[in-house]
Length: 72
Image (cartoon, rainbow, N blue to C red; front, side, top):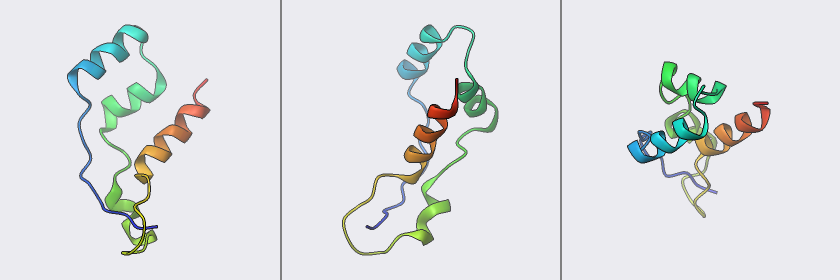
């Protein structure tokens, strides 16, 4: 698998609005993102991937998904 790094993106305003409506008191993952900004970005993981082959899912998405499973 290969990785084609993309810059970290900001959370779209509509997505942020929906998240705040769903979690009016916030949640741990939203608090982390709001305080630290994007914690995981493709550049941190690029050297772990080949330059050839089928594109892999963005590592930061996998990491955030994993953290979401840990948040009670």
